[in-house]
Structures are given as structure tokens and as C-alpha cells.
Image 1 (cartoon, rainbow, N blue to C red):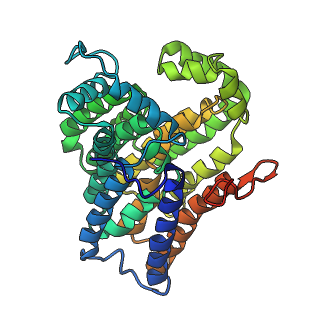
Image 2 (image 1 turned 90 degrees about the horizontal axis):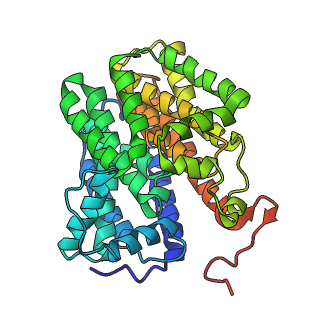
Length: 393
């Protein structure tokens, strides 16, 4: 297979965001006038098949993307795949063994670099589909819209692909263990495989086990999340050094220490306590507070999902000052769509739940479109201009 050459790599995000702007807001318009609970009592429709078709189309579109300078991380993984040495030792169970052996296996099968990224997208987006199928089968279309319009979905499909791949495997593990603890063996296997792709998934795996078997009360997790903000403000730099010394992930020592070169430091000069990231992260926290403390719901599945998010996000808050802290934020953000969407389709919250769900999807998806325009057309100091697109010099 060859790359999709009718879309330049620079325009990929434009096509992605405008496409989902159209279909997500069309869905919003369909439900915004409903004062009922059709979504909650949905028995499944043909839109389930459409959701599968959309996922397949997106796998092909993102998997066969052309390589370009805008896809920084993907270029590195492509280069590593192309120069994979012939005397590579298969079945080497060292750190992140599954990723390295998968690269070797795909190279031995004769796949080219575009087919390689296609396989990665299959697992990345397929994990989201399976999680939605396990937890929100009757509202699969809407569930997938929440995943595809999440803030980090596009970024981790074209850049942080290994992290995204691992977290999608973790997502299925969370869905299994949250649904029924009798699926613990399957969840453990998936967590082990995710660790073999990207060892940073040790964090969500630990958080999942704690949430499923130890701390099941969201009230405790909410208090821990609030405490993490105070700890970060008071002793954030010491916490970063502590986790870096533990060897949780060698990337942490690079991002939090002096391992950044001048270009990286200049490009990500805006570090420190990221109040903007915290503002984005707080909405699943508010949803958890609203459901468990204000409305007194006690859904065991939601409790596991929400607690896992809260514990992972609390860890990120404690290392929030590190450059590239979005890499650690994703270890909780990959659960963001589940925390928001699951209650909307599985809990009896409001009499006009269709309308409120449509409003939430509108605001939820609207955020990524807003950030898209800010990133490409604006800077911290003012308007960047339109020279980045087809009218550029």
C-alpha cells in the first residue's frame, strides 16, 4: 500500500477536524430538540454499523497518511522501522519488548512504512471501538464521536503513536475490569501487553488495580485529586525528582531535568504549573463529583473508570511543571471520553437527557475545534496569519 497522496500532510488535521465538526454537530442538531431519553433507552440501531464503518475509514485515512515534517514522532518511528537491523534478536523480553518485536515481525512480513502505521492505527482506534462496544454498545455512534473528538485523539494518532497504541490496549483492560471483575485475567494480560508497548502504562495499570480492588469509593479519589494540586504547588519540583529517581520512565528524567536541548526548551518554554491543562482535566472530575457526591449515584463500573482517571490525573498534576507534560497527561486523558460519555448513555440523569447530552457533545467537540484554530492561526502574542495553508507563500 502507498500513502494517501491527494491530501498533503500539512492539511491532514484540517480535513480531520472539519470532518468531525460536520458530523458531530449534525448529530447534535438531531438530538438537541428532543426532550426525552431516547439515547438512554436505545435498543441499538443501524448507526452501530455506521460507527464501525467510520472507524475503518479513519484507520485507513490516518494509517496511510503521508510522512511529513509536521508528524515529528511518526517520522522517528518510521525511520526506526526502515533501518531495523537484520540481526535483531526476536523474543527479546527486555523493556518495551512487545513494541520492538512487533516492529521486527511486521518488517519480516514485508510491510512497508505506510502499512506499518496502518497496523498501529488499527490497534489504536480499534481499542477505542472495543471499549465503546463493551460499555456503550447501544449508543456506539455517539460513543465513538466522543472518542474521535477528544482533545488528544488526533495528536496521538499521528505523533505519539506508541503511547496512544499502549493506552488503547489499556483502555480495553479498564473496560473489562470495570464491567466485571471476573474478567481480571483478560485485563491482566492486556495490561502486561500495554507495558510491553510503552512502560509508562504502569501508572494507569496501577491506578486501575487500586480502583478495582482497593479504593472503590470515588470520594476518596476526589480528595486525593484535590490533595495532589496542593502537593504540586507546594513541592512539585521535589515530586518530579522523586519519580524520576524511581525510574518510572526514562522520558521523565529527560523532560523534567536537563536533558532538553535548546530547541526543545525554546519550543516548550511555556512550562511551569499548567493551569490551562488543569482546566481541561477538571471536567471529568466535576462529572465524578456531580454523579457520586451531589446525585449520590453508585455505579460500580463508573466508579472504577472515574477513580482510575482521578488517580492518573493526580500523578500528572504532581509532575505538571515538566516540559512535554502533555505526554504524562495523556496517561489520564485517554480515559476522558469514557468518564464523560458513559454516564450519559448508561445512567438515568435527567428527563431531557437527549438534549443535555447533545449540549455536552457540542461543548466537548467544540473545544477541539477552538484549539485547532488557536494552534494554527494564533499565538500567545497575537494573530499568526493564514500563511500556513494553501495560500501560504
